[in-house]
Amino acid sequence: MEVYDLIVVGGGPGGYPAAIRASQLGLRVALIEKNKLGGECTNYGCIPTKALIKSSNEGKSFSSAIEEAINASNKVREGISYLLKNNNIDVFYSEANIEENNDNFIEENNGLVSKKLIIATGSDPSDLPNIKADGQIIHNNRTILSLKELPSRILIVGAGYVGVEYASALASLGSQVTLIEVMPKILPNIDNDISRLAERSLRNKGVKILKNTTIKEIKEKREKYIIVNINNEDMEFDAVFISVGRKTSIPKIKVETDEKGFIKVDKYLRTSNPNIFSSGDITGNPMLAHKAFAQGVIAAEGVSGNPKEIDYSIIPSVVFSKPEIFSVGYTLNQANSLGIQAKETKLPLGGLARSVIEKEEIGLIKIVYDSSNRIIGVHAISTFASELALSATLAVKLKATLEDLSFSMPPHPTMSEALKEVAELALNRPIHYVKV
Image 1 (spheres, one colour):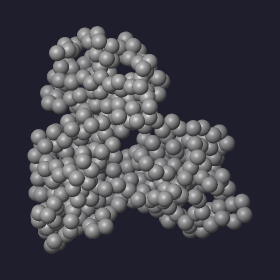
Image 2: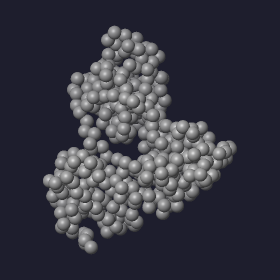
Image 3: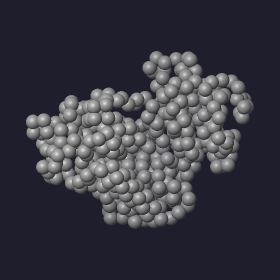
Image 4: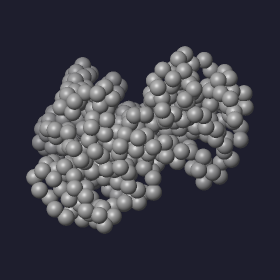
């Protein structure tokens, strides 16, 4: 048996940063990954989808877009391997088979022993009860990149972040996209005004959007097409993409889970077993790579005896559609539901210099603030809305005020100027906007 201070199970965004930080703190670390380093984000999610979207925005062919998406994943994965090697972390590629033996954890498949564990096994794509991915004509985010040609007609089931991103990219590449969502609006967790503008943008691209809608049944499935019944109408597609959420992927280790199967952790990411910590998707929503990165580091600190907390109120979200969507903190409705006396101010971005340069057709920023003018939420849809992510998140985290933002000095011409402009408008002293 090879003795380690820590075994990390899972080499995705919740796992490899944990391994690196633990090694930096002086621990001997082993990382076990059953598939590919980088997890869902690098191999099937964040990286390939953003590369696909970039290619679609540049007018490239579908085959070129798929090739560039796969190449981007490969390069990022190689970078993760390099980081682990240079931080002296031993990586084992296999399923983890861990048993408890007194005060030790024994990993049988590779002959490893450790007193501490971090579980970062991520999540798997969910199916629908009446429609399951087969990797041939019905796809999830792990199989859709295996398509050899652009579907002329594709059905996307689920209008969350992933569904909207794929709808935007595939429509730009030339596919006839139908997007269905069981909820009354697309992007159900996003501010209502931003959601409406996102819907308008997709419709402008030719995407057919059906809300309050589910698939009744599959009427017929052949090698080249599928007929499904939607709202009592039979519709034919060349491919179906299921994007309806995630399910847990937990190794056989005794830790307490919630009713949905996610591992319960305390504010230090410690599980019901004080020698086991957990990070990433396996700890529940929101399932975002940057949340997993932060959790991995916090988990490593906890394992090393330096417990630190993570602030879940300032997790930014970005949808990399065209235009992009950004959100952090509370919406006005959320703030009011919590008893916070809040107001919001929204600014159309058509007159912003960067918007003019980018020929922005749809652009809006909304800022939410409390009775002390403290920033508690920022939401935007525009080209390069992701530019706002760090500044807006810091504004919420550091409890900046409208006055603080109004006297900031963002570089010109950038989308980051929107934060200053909307703060000035909220204070009723806009410089580059005329109130009608």
